[in-house]
Image (cartoon, rainbow, N blue to C red; front, side, top):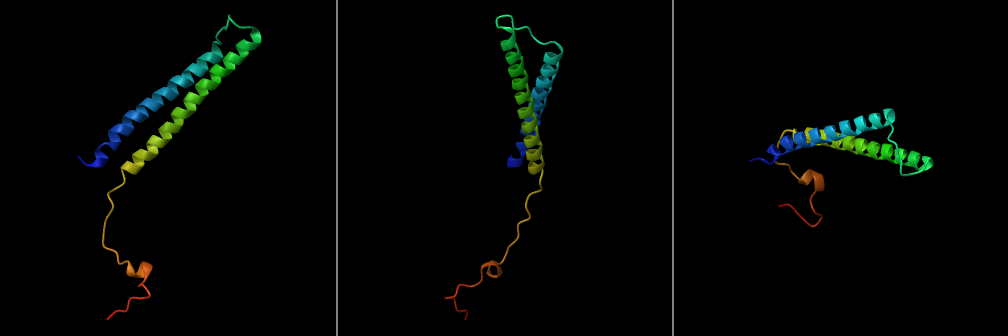
Amino acid sequence: MPPGCFAPPASHQSAASAVARQSIAGSLRSWVHINPPKFQDVDAFAGDDHLFNLDRGLKIIENRAESLNRFIQAYRQLAQLPPPALQPVSLHPLVGAPSYWKPG
């Protein structure tokens, strides 16, 4: 099996997972803003801190999933590049002849 055969299925599965995480985190953030949880075991000021931390944590998950998705899309494009067209190249014009070498 050629090495490139692994990339598309793996990137597809990873992308689906990243998009799902991003969607779930975004949905939870929206729900938390609409229905803020009641933190009964803490005082009012700490409750705001917990809500802020919850929102921040969900935003981090959402951002990381989005970053992972961008990476996967870039990897997918790279994996779809055609194989290189190899051909002989003369190194002489690139590096020149050594000064001690005398043709002839």
